[in-house]
Image (cartoon, rainbow over all chains, first blue to last red; front, side, top):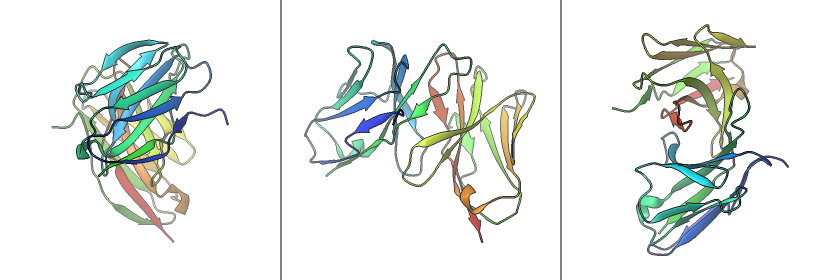
Length: 115
Length: 109
């Protein structure tokens, strides 16, 4: 399977715990995006990387959230001291900026429930 | 006000019907426009890009009116498999996608 993969697919945690999600983009895709989607809403942009550089962060990304892409391949998104409001689907997407039409391909998401 | 506004529906239509979705966006600097499709509890998938000249892909036709900041999607001869949420999307120079809340379509047998 050469698509975007995300792990874990589901995570249940207690409020105050830290969680980390992983995204493996399509091989050789240089851009990687994180989005969050809550029920009944479209995905909302959180942050994106071009290779290993984090180029933009949304104001939605509070200081409890941190994302990395250390070698320009996979990425991790960590949420510290989780709150119930963090419950959402966390989606990762990747794209190739050198393609004429830079389509973002989404992974299956990690569904987080904070109790 | 949301950057991308869509009628949430739901739209319930019989098989074979023609259905149209509309969307407005507020950021006049938006450069690219798309319709994504999202099945229940799945990830969004690109349905088609939207160009000012209008574009068609089989039963699907998308239109963009930059002056009115308005995007549309027309589905002809709808199939049961078209049942999904349709997301209106735009992006600017920064490339991140801005999604509407989606319009839910159910095609009935």
